[in-house]
Every structure is written in C-alpha cells, then in structure tokens.
Image (cartoon, rainbow, N blue to C red; front, side, top):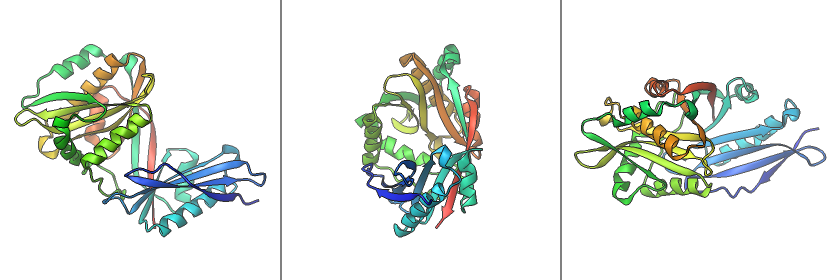
Length: 293
C-alpha cells in the first residue's frame, strides 16, 4: 500500500531560511519516513533548497522515499527554487537513491577526525608559537568582540571562493546581524563556539579565521565549521597556524573532549594538506548531489 504523506508545520525558521516538512506513515498510521526541505531566503542563495530524506530501514524499497521526494520537489518548484541539493555518505542507501532519481553528483567531501588523545601538545604549542611576521593570533568564545566585529564580517568574504565543485551554492552574504545570529544559534543549542583569528598587525584587521563548535558538556567530538584566509593574505601559513591554535585550545580547555571533526572538498588540496599535516585521519567520504529544477 502506498504510504500516506502528510505536510507538517516546522517551527525551525531563522533569518537564513525556513523549512518545509513531510511525514510518511503506513496504513496503521505508524511513521515510516520523513523529509525536510530547507529554503534559503537570504540574497545570494534564495534560488536554493536543501533536502534531507530519512526512511526507516525496513520500509526502504517500498516507494516511501520516492513519495517524499515528489512532495519536496513539487514544493521546491512552487517556491521558485532553481536547485535542490542533498548529501549522502558514500556507499549508503541515499548514495544509490539520489542519482537514480535524477540528482547528479557535484562534489565529494572527505570527512576526517583528529583524536585529541593522540594530539602532540608540545608540537602544537611550537606551531602556535612560531612567529608569522606581520600577523598575530587572537581568539574568543561566542560572539565576536565589538572591536573586531567589522573586520571579522569583512573576512567572511574569504569563503566566497571556497571550492564547491559544480554545486549551484550561490554566495553567502554576511553582515553583522548574520554573524550574531550564527553565534546565537550555536548558543541556543547549548554548544560552545570557539573562534581563532589571524590579525594584520599593521592595522588590527581580521584577515582569516577558523571556527570550532564544542558540545556544551565538553565531551564527545567537536565540529569545525569553517577555516579561511582572505586572498591577499594567503601563502603565509595562516590556516595551519590558526587551526593549530584551535586544536591546542580545544585540548587544554576541554580535557574530556575526544576528537575534532571536519570535512573538506576533494578539490580543495590546500586545506586537505593542512588537515593531513595536523594529524586528521579520513573516516569516510560523502557526496553532494544536485537536482536542477
């Protein structure tokens, strides 16, 4: 019997977008799957939607995922979206489901982990203490300090040329409100946002940053969000310097933290090399898929 698809009201709306949701249920009304479609609403990405479909393992290959996908794609077209993106771990059921239904692979991500128990604190301290003429490091927790806010917002442009393969990702337009909202969202989940930044010593402006989100109880694995350096300041080893400082701080401030997670596009050899040098070990790959509407 074909599953029943019910549209739900999802309250998870913020300044960057809103979500549509659907629940699939069987003849007895038991949930068998769900779908979420995030509609990006800020300028630069308002053509884009991001899909997440989950189907209970025993209900797969019975049309549940296809019905949920139909509902989401129809909604995406109704909302005037140009592209829908979705991610699946390599070799997973989703990695077979998406291309079979018209999605094409646009990016491969290598996911890596650094075990903090195996991190060499002395080596990290030496890396952090190595001078980088013309630059200094600074760091903060939560919201950016007022005196750095404007140049930190400007430094977010360093992400504009991040390798994204053929993904129709658009441009993330940052302003101070968005920076504050991002920090508030992390805090609202009960997590801790740590930022290390490279500062131009000649004028005190932020020219690069790396962000790490730590579980609120300081245990488990933390997740790197972004690491970037403005084009005019690349080639000085700032990404390695900042990330080494972030690892060292995580290890010393959160002694019960197990590891750090990050993912890097396969067509971003520079950041992959930085991660390799710092001891991150590949755990699995993920594929980004796109459906053009």
